[in-house]
Length: 267
Image (cartoon, rainbow, N blue to C red; front, top):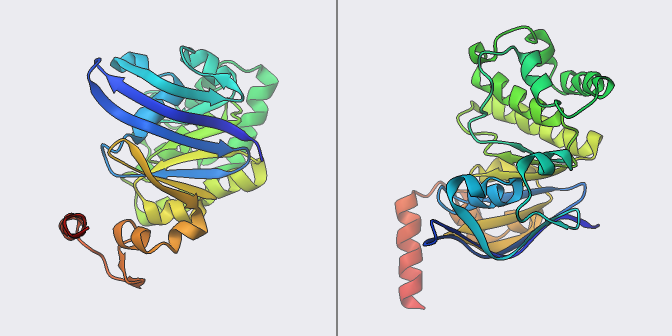
């Protein structure tokens, strides 16, 4: 498999002073789901901004390393070029045009496409999300959180992406809705052969779907591997899946931090 997205030794700083990402390398192979996991502040969103052209809006700079998509360097590329070349982002918080209908939001995602392409993509989106077809004439601001997330994903799909980046798709949603969203992400990979970068805090859901997993802390990749291997890793089970000794049993964040500190002192 060839890597569609490659980040190599990336160092990203804000305001010429704050180092948000340190020496990060990761790759996303075509046709696979790759999960990037980590808590708030780990640097996940900063990496997404480097991929989708959003760093410059927040005084961010890729000071070292490279970000390549489809073999081309993304440094300095405007967002429109990135979208036109098949990389789409579903941002955290959905960011819909809340005064527009569901269908109007979808059309906004296809503004670079021809009318026949737009019609075909709408059919694909409505096939993936039948509920959106039922709600197509409703104002998006009045939809439930889960329905708004479906619109956000559908809008990104309207651009016919080669690579779809999803930023916290499960955030703030009920468990049943999360299951439905993840089922659809799996269909996008299996039926549409789509390449997906899944940025999440919900480790259980993400590892259940992903082919490969990276875990990020404090601006660095601290662990990576095939999803099955990661699920069986004792450290991952304890710190990210809420398991101790391979048996279910949630640990509090305080307990985890205490254990890490003690382990570091004794080493």
